[in-house]
Amino acid sequence: MTPQYKKQISKFLSLILRHQPEKIGLQLDENGWALINDILDKSNLKFTFVELEEIVVTNDKQRFSFNADKTKIRANQGHSLKTVDLDLKAQVPPEFLFHGTVERFIGLIKSNGLQKMKRQHVHLSANKGTAIKVGSRRGKPIILTIKALEMQRKGYKFYKSENGVWLTDEVPVELIIF
Ligand code: HQG
Image (cartoon, rainbow, N blue to C red; front, side, top):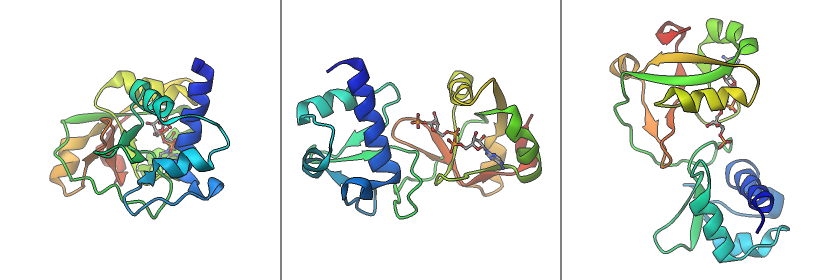
């Protein structure tokens, strides 16, 4: 497999495991798991179980996880599907978390806080470097600092995905340092 083909498969997996399983007639269970054999059968991109394993293990952001007996796979975060509940336990966050965005959203964020938009959660990171990468997908990154521990003490819930992304429902504007 070339790196390009691996990337193409990884993007395809993100699409069917986070957003549109119906594209290939795939079923996800309530916690977002899909049967690996179904994916291998239904995918137009051809790959074997061993190749899938390599893609999951070497994925730059560890976007996917296997279940214990490696019959199922799911995306660790990033879903837009409303029906998937990752069943994560609420956790106490560090004092500060970071969010990478771009200038054109700042006005709206200043009025509405950070909103999950099309996804299930607002995505935050414990380190600035990751937030810079996330923001850079859209242009010159602007990094917002979130008073996460204070938020949690005020009753907001925080979750950490299997691959270390911090998730929350929204961030009120008064707890964002611009
Ligand atoms: C912005 C990728 C207007 C927000 C990344 C962001 C991440 C607002 C965009 C993961 C807003 C939503 C998630 C408001 C927030 N008004 N815009 N009130 N509140 N926004 O893609 O955090 O490679 O859903 O700043 O690396 O950019 O796919 O979220 O710019 O981990 O695995 O609305 O997706 O991971 O965009 O990225 P997104 P995100 P993967």
